[in-house]
Image 1 (spheres, rainbow, N blue to C red):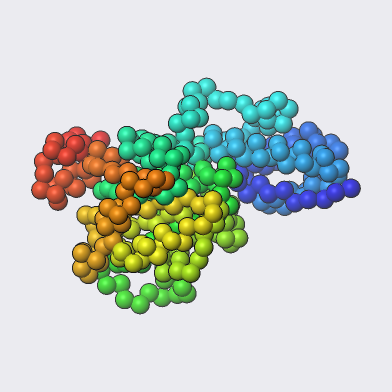
Image 2: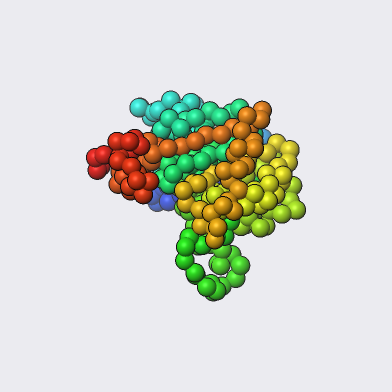
Length: 324
């Protein structure tokens, strides 16, 4: 007789259990040799070890389906537990999907250079993604990281950025260290919250599977079996970016993102991103993807704003000229 707690924190609790526990009751019916006890985000399974392993496999398939389509039902459970993963009509080609996010969100490359970043990721262990605000550099990079974690290509995700204020003096922020740094790291949390269920993300962060930290905390570390993203790298100096890049350990993937037009350092000449790209471009195993205004996927006005600040007409830099 074996006993094991099986995690279901990758699925919304209401979706998993169903109305009046209809989904959970059906799972119990399908595994009559096991005693199943619901414990919030986990199920305690008691019975033969082989049956528990079979249930664990089915629950993983159930989570995969939920991540793709954002819903569960008794009929879906019947198909997954008895015959395999069902497919919805109109399902996109899986080769185009970077990762399936929360509530049926499908994350895939939406522009030519986003696709270039995905393609370069398959060939290079270190990538630079440089371009304007709103072009999806960081979001695509984080999607690649989450996909690598879900596919067990890496054991952890580490996201970092320099804690540099964007032209404002925020003074002494209240709270502990995490609370002081969270405002700088919020864009990274936003992307992760799109792609990992909240309960699971919280658990990952508590266990160190997902780490978000300021760049200064990278010094002295060797990052093995990790997908590491340095965001807002235009606000790093050349020594800082060198320090970061030399943290790369075995089976590691590094992506460096930044926008050379939005340097917030006291002296713009101190930025090391452009110099690092020049030094490392062309080295085997290092890829450089340069985004432009055609990749901007926020509100259509963002592209025109970027062009205006560059002193160009929208048509000159390829920005959208029509509001959505």
